[in-house]
Image (cartoon, rainbow, N blue to C red; front, side):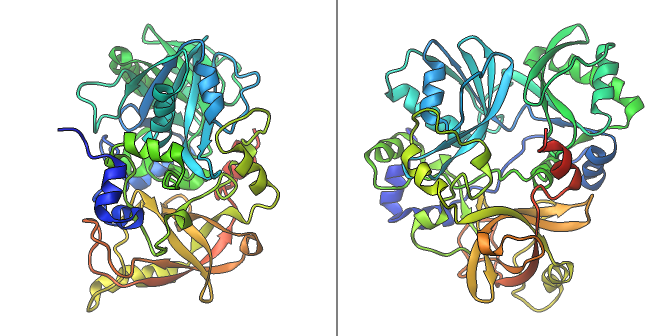
Length: 452
């Protein structure tokens, strides 16, 4: 039986806010082992030695090939595509006609006229729709994540990150690492297999994302584990991996801005399955779905926006660029308030909304109010606990006037009224004080990773 379209689901429920606020979709599922040791030690590894994270199963790949593949991507991406040659990658960012985010993914230029777009499905769906409905001499092969796909993925992906990541690769390859610029690719031989590697780092630490055909993955993994034994290599599971973005400052799941009354978006909602968007959670309680939209400037993507080509949403983004109202920050939650909220579990209820550790986000699209007094001055997005800093933090976007490090704000945690999402228990809202801090929060990431 065909899946219900997003358009039909909205018509059935009445409005997109109610549809998403009560959607059963959890925050995100990483279909790998939750822990190999414990998530605290696994987080520690990428700061002190080297963590190996298996990325083979939780992302969607869209392989786009043909003479118009680059034109398709340039028509949809806010990025520049000048000098985007083979063996390079970029964070591909797409917006809708209003200039608000559809989402982002990593775009690999594998061969002439062959690209691989890798990430959450939001951008993959958007690009696939335009390929199927537009006039492009290109084709696409989609490889969904392991929660959806039957059978193994097309590629394995292993992320190595941490101070000894380079040493692990050199031991596994038996040769010095070739000079490789950030977000460029190199080739290695590991266990007799050809391996491609993207110079990368998910938590602000040095590292590579290694990938190749799935059938080579077991042999490559075994060689990496053997090489890593002398360099403190630790396998990191889903729990630790889910928090890496909190250290580097990447917002993983902005709500896609696809609900406007625009003919292009109406056609897209008719094409898109209702299950493709996910759940909305948090204390932001507007009945207007547009109030949940984010712009590239809200979450720090101004560094990738280039007006050197025409793309969907360009005119709207040019207007926003003149004076972006908000800025991405880290919020350092006051430990005594977090402790009191968790402690409410041991008092007569209802208490605070449960904090799952290390990642506290309980909806796919988390949006909690950031307050100064009773005035909302921003939105807290992804939130969780960083064992390396012994801190509960969230990534947020706040009004420029309140974005200076050291500014005191509050996060309103929980929903009122409680939604029907199955991961939401009876609770009451809890005000948690927070201090504005830089993003990326971790010093290494601020000084080294983003500066390269």
